[in-house]
Image 1 (cartoon, rainbow, N blue to C red):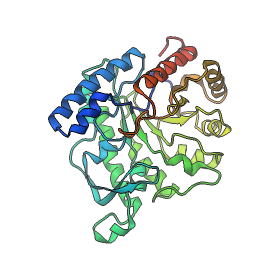
Image 2: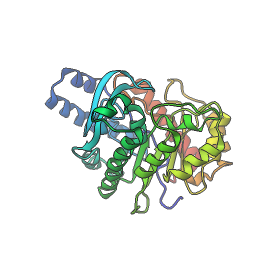
Image 3: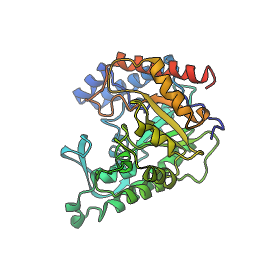
Image 4: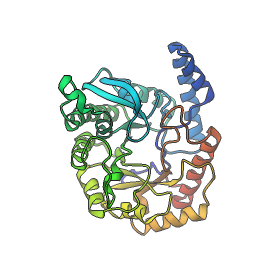
Length: 346
């Protein structure tokens, strides 16, 4: 699938917020926050150019966490006490969701004005949101009757947003579902309110795009860590039933399970391998990472692959995984590795 595939040096879209932006968010002044966000986005675009990334995002700076593009623009959700199954602040669906405005298209248009590289947009997947926000106790009092119903309503909203983003010139869209890989384990874990079957059906509804201009990729990140062992049949089913162009897969630990996830990927799908660990500050050995990439090239054509860090650096604004400087060094390392793989041909 290497027609105009030039998004070799990728990242998940979530970057560490600068201190000035955190301070503006803490003050609670909306006008001051908007100004700080604009400054921070401009600076982070410059950072991405300096590290020669082939994708540009707004760093997720406009939201509290990677789900914010939906929670900030869609009615029907309420912040609740406690945490969801994967440790993020808990939200619940009180009614079927309704989009009050576009999720990311306007911010992507503003981002495009800052860079000649077509912007990348990351969104939470509908199956992930349904799995983590459906509450059975609310079903009898106006809430969604099932997690599947909630997921399908969210899929309709996100599918419409994908179409709008493509019409605005966005060429790379990533849906994040940190729970999906748990379903591909040889002993699959039950995480959230959706079954594997329902999760596949919901994700498939969202990523289908009738008119895909050349060079457009709709990708899915199914998780940030491979299970201990992979059921190849379940992994193959994931890839076949969810018609995403690009799969963003963990590949930073050198495990057989990571290789099995890649082996299960159909030939006609792109792979972006998370070869650099975004959770630890130490830099990986280039030789060690290149050995893993060489092994991947024995499984899938290198021309149909990209590389990135293993996950976002700050999927929750107040819980960054690294410092700003440590993040920069990791991004530089990804760029260096990409040049070992593809030279200057991006």
